[in-house]
Amino acid sequence: MITDERKKNAVRRLQAIEGQARGLQKMIQENRGCVDILTQISSTQEALKKVGQIIMRNYLEICATDSIRSNNQDEIYDELMDVIYKFAK
Amino acid sequence: MITDERKKNAVRRLQAIEGQARGLQKMIQENRGCVDILTQISSTQEALKKVGQIIMRNYLEICATDSIRSNNQDEIYDELMDVIYKFAK
Amino acid sequence: MITDERKKNAVRRLQAIEGQARGLQKMIQENRGCVDILTQISSTQEALKKVGQIIMRNYLEICATDSIRSNNQDEIYDELMDVIYKFAK
Amino acid sequence: MITDERKKNAVRRLQAIEGQARGLQKMIQENRGCVDILTQISSTQEALKKVGQIIMRNYLEICATDSIRSNNQDEIYDELMDVIYKFAK
Image 1: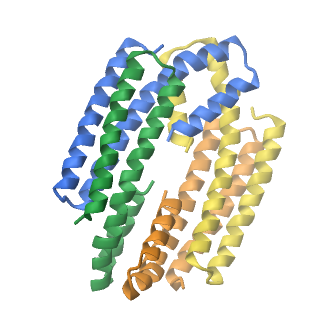
Image 2: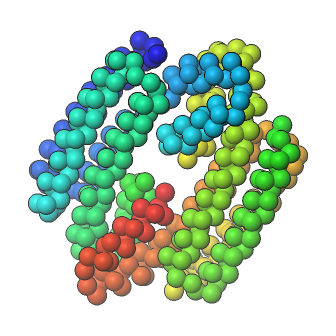
């Protein structure tokens, strides 16, 4: 479960990302400079990364914490390492 | 200037990214698992990276090539290094 | 505390990294091709990343687990998020 | 060919990286904290990235420039994109 506050925060950010994706289409159709477009893509990637961090924090506080408290078998840390190295970049 | 084929390709991908951003909002509101959501965020980031690569290639073939052909002063390579290390990841 | 097996594993890898750093110096002095040198740098970075993963896993299994089990105050997850996003890439 | 100044600069940095790899072995054997060790690994990775940037700049100024000036066939940009997305991160 994701907390209500995090849900609202993540959804609001994803709506802004939709807007950025539309804005990028306009920039491309209007022949804006490549470096400007790359800058805007990079800012959209940063925005997505922030959403990922909200979900990652929820994952750590809730899912990973439950698993770690109930036991500490290898598979928990296998999953944790997998999630972290796949998504935290 | 971005070639017409690249414009079409990039715009089509950005429309799909809009759809992914909307789908993510739904996933979050429906309490889908954190790892599923992180996986979908990661796939959206990959999709944005592809758009970035289309623009980067256009930048290299057109803008950077013009500059490199007309002369090779330091500032061209300063810009190129800056663009590459900022956006090619 | 790092487990003995991890210590041995990490130290052995770091000795290999020393060797790669020396090999790179030779490649550069012998005027090897830039792409070959970049490939070797990239392989050295991967080797360092592996060492980082050994230490990260130890951190998660031992330090983070202790903190998470004793309580779940915000600062633990602040640190965890900080460590993960700084070092897991 | 790598310019003499770049050779010296890169070799000096690689010698420092050898030292960092040795220092890390000592940190691990002395049971230093995981976060301290991860910080030092990260600083070694940054140092390697700097060496990579020296070689990348040489690649762009010399190899890529020669190719771009002599013609602009697709394979040049295929290689350039490949080199950039593989090594510039």
